[in-house]
Length: 90
Image (cartoon, rainbow, N blue to C red; front, side):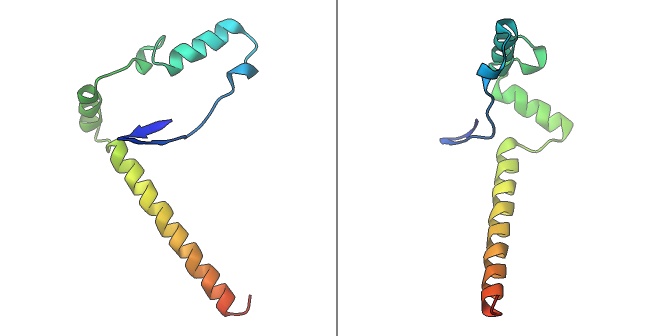
């Protein structure tokens, strides 16, 4: 789940019940919760912002905003194409 401010968006899901091995299930849960793997360790916002800045990465909020704008533009284009198709008798 992606959380930005007070809004939440589901970006994927995983069925833990499909994993038969209980040790592997525990390992997956630990990694998902930021435990058990150094790259997944929880970090402070300022620490993450510093890493993104040093590497030249955009902020997550900006990426999401850009994607939402692109999706809205595609939606508008689709509506225009539908109107053109309807206007031409299709």
